[in-house]
Length: 355
Image (tube, rainbow, N blue to C red; front, side):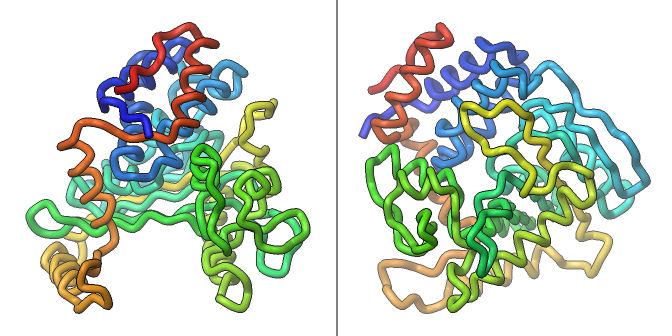
């Protein structure tokens, strides 16, 4: 598959966003977000998402020149209007505010309405973790999950993320959709021209499908856990919990009212998002030591397969990122590159240079 220099990917992302009206500062923040996803191996949330951002700016659904506004706040909480800015613009504003409040009051909880797709939820949790805090970030999304026993999609992928600091720069990072898989993972399979695993999605007949194109078109992802017999209702419940943190607190659209994130939509999504920072120093002393102890214990468990060691949450992404950065390049499916080159022609920028 094609290989691209990391800095070339960054250049392409920034130029694409600037070409359609994003300020360079905001374009760079958005590119950092997307590039992080690709360097940790989550291609569903990286370059794969760029054209949708570009399209939303061109269509007037995303307004990259705007700044978020605080509507109401207390010492530990804030309600924010994201003003339909780029996802990274609003998310940086909200998590910075949560961090500030946590450092002053012990906890910062910020909920925002009128936001756009903010990439990997874990990226924002890690932003707080780097400040020595516990970070959490949540978002709702368009309705692509089929609730247990339902024929219709009604809930979002509504991801959960949490990052906690340990000793010597180590950390615990949890970042996962409450669906069996993010919709972007199905898009990646389409770019690869490959099927999806059994248990990711339903077809229009209500039965599970392995056809990636059909799964994307039908937009009926199974909850985390799959069908009811394998505890899919738990994924459904987790999605509803995130919904309350996001649309419930912010007054945004609930997932069932969010328009589908496609190239032909004509309505801004008005997503709800939630950002949390907690200062562990306000609780029992030795938090980082206890996190480190858990990480060490889990990693030292005897594996079923000696060639596959037990990993703590966040280890896989950390390892992939180190390898990617040391190599200096990212490998993409040919279908992804083809889409980018076509987009470059449309918006009048230099195509992506492939090795």
